[in-house]
Image 1 (cartoon, protein in one colour):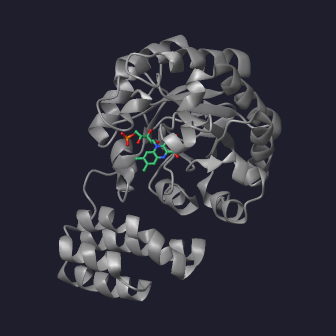
Image 2 (cartoon, protein in one colour):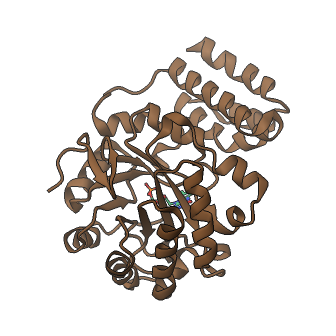
Image 3 (cartoon, protein in one colour):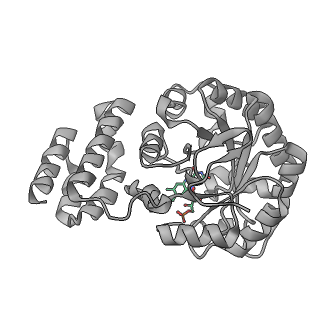
Length: 325
Ligand SMILES: Cc1cc2nc3c(=O)[nH]c(=O)nc-3n(C[C@H](O)[C@H](O)[C@H](O)COP(=O)(O)O)c2cc1C
């Protein structure tokens, strides 16, 4: 019987300080977004999905940027995707060498570009391969392996549930994260928490829950209703690292304007460190709307940030926002 979300727990031999986890977020969950979640209390952080092929073939940018782990973000789980067990074993070895504490394998991504290669949610329909991939990741890395999956690819299908059992029994995975929306729903609709509860009751390993946990209240309700070992915060945490504190109950109020701007300033600094000012300028455009919305900034500020030529221009646009606070 899980206790409070603030209780520590063990995932495959890794001690985790609490039960509130940053979900994998493609194109977003790099080292500094994970570090930010950690600074705000996350017990465990999961990387954005990383191509096992890119790692295996030594893609320079993937290895330099996506395998980068900050010393203060542990424990960290690196999520890999792919369809070839030998490539997965090789990539898992590199991820372990980069300092990961755990490996998560993506078996839930519904994006056609990923599924058509036989990776992501396509693995739900290829359970033998899915089991081979999980075994290969453990063999290659020597680390505990978890899997994130969906109940099925289409409404009513339960292939993901059957696969979760096989992954535990035949591949010895240390934990399973269920996002209880079928893959064709992508991220829309209500997650089926009763289905998740069934999995929690049936599996002998920790089951983590993802989906719809956008507020502290929703996270608490899902945690209690499913009996899951931990909750994953995804879209609710975008530009809102304070959600970790709200879910953990370490903070009640909303951040003030100067705090939001300071956080955005920290993100800008980290992005420059991550990829240099030029690329950071473009990369950060997806981050601004989350923060500007919290600041109550209107469309003109949003538009100006999207077209600002340099990060100096971005800082100049944000300075008056601080002044009017
Ligand atoms: C922009 C975005 C990127 C995502 N990237 C990944 C990913 O790389 N790997 C993964 O397993 N899930 C990924 N997901 C799914 C989330 O981890 C999470 O399961 C999903 O968003 C449901 O949670 P939510 O309703 O709280 O957002 C992504 C979701 C979004 C919105």
